[in-house]
Length: 211
Length: 159
Image 1: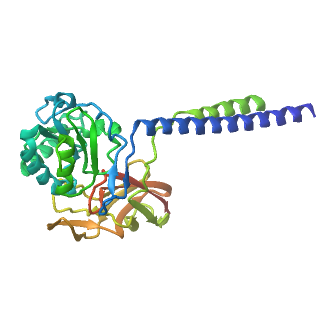
Image 2 (image 1 turned 120 degrees about the vertical axis):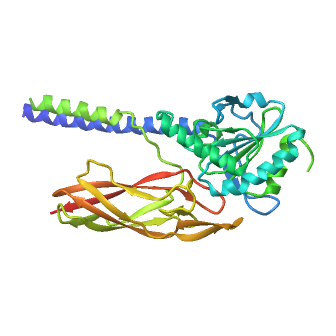
Image 3 (image 1 turned 180 degrees about the vertical axis):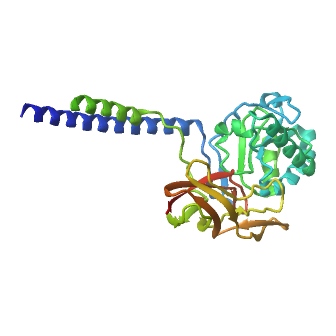
């Protein structure tokens, strides 16, 4: 009888431990998920009050653009901070992104049109790069360089965009663009291919000029 | 003795429960879903063709196995080592021509809707739970998602 009680108590104790462990694990995962979500500003598509296609609204709107330093294709480091005083279009793209190929000529034309007013484009490649393998890294950089040459991008092209994706919303889709004014504040964002007119309107917003 | 064993087991299982697990779920549903078969029976040691069925979410397309441009990411099937099943060959369906509304001059070779891949496999005798991998890259008419690798779990019974 005494032995049965001991066995029963042990079984109940084990079950209680399982239940506690399951609850603790659930709480830990929940908190970890909330921390990750808090660090990754999630944008959303909202109806356009003027009609037409839905607009992308980023939680970064009205806030300082997250700072970053990335390498360009020659290995030189470039920081967003060095463009303070200029309006900047931070454009995330990739060589495997067909809509990005459509958008890039528009960005080039608009960049050339507004450069004299203090506007620059930073083209950030989200192509995977393998820093652990020198040969692979070289091949990947060559592929990006080939694309840049083919598209004739005149603006700085930075690599390893994935490494700064989290503060910019996670880069679930490409192309994704953030328009930053001369004070370093995000004034607009775009998710996916829109139109040259919409891009131009956002550039003018970043420059602080009228429509 | 039994009590000691039970307590030891409990502590081991507790460790497993509270271990930090890596990995995260994406916030959006997957672009490609594996449909069937869940289980196949094949002769052990002989190459057998198994047809794997997939479905792409409406509104999306993925590059075919032979996209028209080098930088586009092809759809590819693989079976990692260690499952007791070897992938001998793969026959992919032909892609269909697709153009983006804003670039009608550029033809892409894509899959959309449901598609099948014929995999020729050789399995050692036994029951193998295989995790075949499908790498793909999906887009809609206006945006592209990063490349993904999904798992297709198939129970291969080789007799």
